Amino acid sequence: SVRRFYKQKHTMFSRGAHGQVRAVDGVDFTVEEGETVGLVGESGCGKSTLARIICGLEAPSEGTVRWNGADVSAMSHSERKTLLHRQVQMVFQDPHASLDPRRSVGQSIAEGITTHRLLPASKVEARVGELLTQVGLNPDHAHRYPHEFSGGQLQRIGIARALAVEPKLLVCDEPVSALDISVRAQVLNLLNRLKRELGLSIIFIAHDLDVVQHMSDRIVTMYLGKVVEQGDCDDVYGATAHPYTRALLSAIPRKLAPNERLERVVLEGDPPSPIDPPPGCPFHTRCYTAIERCATDVPALDAVPGGRPEHRASCHLAAQITLSRVGMVSTIS
Ligand code: SF4
Ligand code: MG
Image (tube, rainbow, N blue to C red; front, side, top):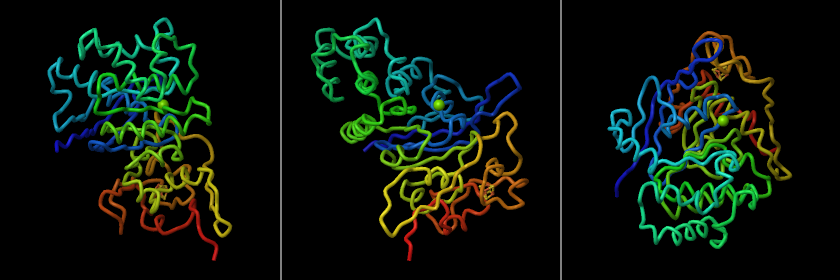
């Protein structure tokens, strides 16, 4: 079987009012075919910038984005256009903003099919019906307009529109955070089912680990534009190595068994400005386990001692953190 992958490593600069900001730095990860990678962090950590770079909406100033091993920036204009408009599709946070209110949802879904001449005109309508069915909506509603649908239904339509061009990779930027709690699980289940049925790769961006947990094969945690932990879902949840990931995990509401307790971590304040990031470990100003050297020495993103080599964390105390119980559910003995 063909092994498709999407790898990237880059630094992204954007110029703000106060000078040059390194929005994303030293990020390096691969998405395999049929795999979901969850990208987690508080708002402003660079997740959306990364999503925009992956989708070709912004260019990295350093580093490369690779598709099946080929450097995207070295591709010809037409190759890149095909890649970015067909192989990669984005699902946005706000489904209202991403659909044209003056066009029927069927027209919006059909747009990619006709632009790329994927089907003869006579077959487009049937395909739109098929896509609506695939996302759990009534195919007869193709002629309706966005205002006639609920938020959850609109997000399904957004997904149908993304699928219309038969992409290999879906980049979902906070796809359920604007939706009612009651419909979130349905949309997540839909994405999981489509991933299985279509062999899609998904980059799933969210600000909390709660949502990502049920979606991802691998997790990447970001803080101030840097990856602070990455690894298989089981490793990141079961042997969490970075205090920041641990704090995000402890914020997940969960039912505890009578003999369990949750040692919760509450992070004080907002992340510092990425314009003037703290020296040493970028997390040290909010870290509840910081030691003196954290304020001066930058920790490298290294394999977690005693873990699998793919499980990496940037913390001087990664080995100890993995063994401690702060922020974890523990059994009272
Ligand atoms: Fe906390 Fe220090 Fe680890 Fe940074 S390196 S996460 S400040 S313990
Ligand atoms: Mg964002």
